[in-house]
Length: 122
Length: 179
Image (cartoon, rainbow over all chains, first blue to last red; front, side, top):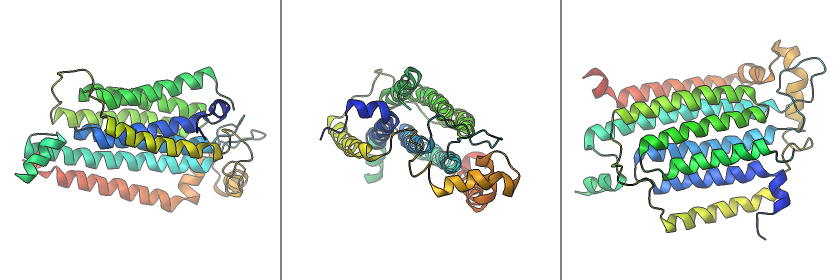
C-alpha cells in the first residue's frame, strides 16, 4: 500500500515529479504570505499538469509529430496542442493577477496577506 | 522508456528549483528560481519529443513570464531580507503531504511512460491526426495542423482569452497608465 515502489519509479518517474510539483504549487498557494509568490505557486501547479499531459503523449522511440515519409512512429500531437493553448492562457492569467497585485500595492502599500487582512477588517 | 541519468538530473533540477521558489524569502530570488525552473521544464519537453511546446515554454514561460514578474516586482516591494528561507509551516506540509500521497497512490494505475498501447498514443484520435493531417491540411507539422485547422475554434477562444486579459490588465492599471 506504500504508493512509491522502486520498479514503478523507473517506469513512472515523470508522474511522481508531477505529483511533487502539484504539492509544491499547492504549498505556495496556501502558505506564501506574499502575493507574488502565490502567483508563482499557481504557475508551478500549472506546469505540473502540463508535465502530466506531455508525458502521456510520449511514445518510446517516437519522433516529433512532423510528418515525413517513413518517419514514424510519432508521439501524439493532440496533448501538445492542448498544452500550447494552456501555456498561453496561463500567461494571460498571470498578467491579470500581477496587474491586480500592482493595483493592490498602489492602494494599500503592502503585498503581505496578513497585513492586507488586518487592513480589511480595520 | 526507462529513467536515464539526464532525465533524472533534469527532474531533480526542476523539483529543486520549484522548492527554491517556494522557500526563498526574497521575492526576486524566488522569481529567478522560477525562471530556471521554466528553462529546465522546456528541456524536458524536448526530451519528450515536444519541440513546439518546448519553444513556447522557453519563450513564453521562461521569457515573458519572468519579465512580467520582474515588472510587477519593480512596481511593488520585496519583503525584508531578514532571513534566507521562509519558515516551514508543519500543518500546511501535513495537508499538502496528504494530497501528494493520495495523488501518488493513483500513479501505479497509469500506463508506463512511452507505452505504445496507452490510450493516448495508441488511440483512434491520435492515429487519425497522424494519418490525415498532411493530406487534409497540407501542413507537415501535425501539431500546427491540429492547432490551426482541426481545433481552430479552440485557438480562436485562446485569442479571445488573451484579448480579454489585455483589456482586464489595462482596466485594472488605468490609474497608473494614464495618470
